[in-house]
View 1 (tube, rainbow, N blue to C red):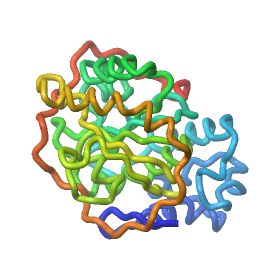
View 2: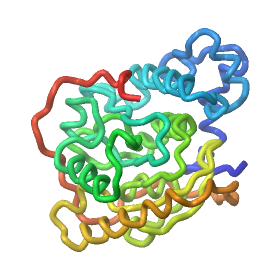
View 3: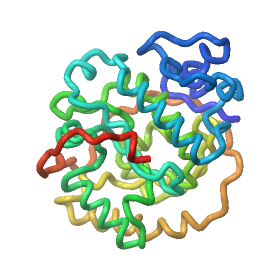
Length: 287
């Protein structure tokens, strides 16, 4: 198994945070690890080391609910916990072959409790429709589960704190393909500082946590809204997606070297999603 890393903490280190206390029969304190709200009997599955050991679709959906419940009580990032309206965990098909990972919730996502609402979400749905897919067939998540104040960039410590939740989602959904949207998700899941402009549209195999998948970096839809050249590049990459999804399941990825935490790099400007905000959604019914 390869060991990807974000700064000083390798993926294996993140897994030890998820399971360390559980494997010893000890539940970590709330906000200290993802075992805090595991249901009775979950310890037996946890001792099998990874989320992917939970095999059936029903079990994986229930495990996603447990992970959501834990994320909702997370206070690892004091500023984000104090300023958020809701934890935007993710939404979609828990058995999806295709998963999208964006950067962080915006203002409307924070209010509605759902990822990718407003203009960026509508564009994503349009692009999916152009290749014969719908939003209900994919799973959508972000690197951060809470909105950074003022829509500022995620900070390295916040990314580090939130990464175990994303790894858990990836191991549970177990997608064949992950589309990273923009710089932050791309740099994190590739464990490499190369920006989206250099690597978009390039397919590569990566092992994330325990799950080996194909990464397919693309521009963030918000970056394409008012930039025709970026929009065309995004559409071209989307047109390649059916072929990527048709590839056979990938074998184990080669081990990767440690990388520095993702840093900001010039990219077409992101546009905050627009649209009326509704009540906070009950995410437990979305998987």
